[in-house]
Each structure stands twice: as C-alpha cells, then as structure tokens.
Image (cartoon, rainbow, N blue to C red; front, side, top):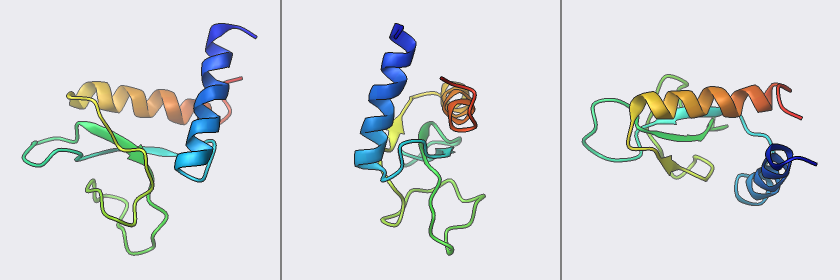
Length: 90
C-alpha cells in the first residue's frame, strides 16, 4: 500500500468515527465569523431543514469542520475529497 492509499484508509477510519460516514460528501463552509467567502470545509449536512446553498455550520452539521484560511484552498480540498467520495480514489 502506498502512502496515498494509507492516508486515505486512515482518513476514512477517522471520518467514520467522527462524521459517522467513512466517505462523506464535502462542502465549503463559513467556519469563521466575519469572512466574506467560505474558508472552511465540512461534510454535507443531512438535515432536511439545512438548505444546500447555506454555507453556515449549525449544531445539526456533522464534524469535522476544518478551517483552511483560504476560499480557493477550501474549494480545492472539497473537490479532492469529493473525488475520493465518488470512487476516484483507491
């Protein structure tokens, strides 16, 4: 197993423990008050009342919420994580 596959395996174990899903779908989010763009990432919230376009994080939202300090970096990480979610990763 190469380093990337080991990291994926460890991340999936972590996400399963923390988010309840080893391969959650991800979104950008407002993890810090006062930012003009979403600079964090979080798993998509399964609550029916949480509108998909709402980038806020509420108590209904699964963890982890990760602050990236950059909108472009957050968007990039979401695309990478969702590529794994969609079967793009080993």
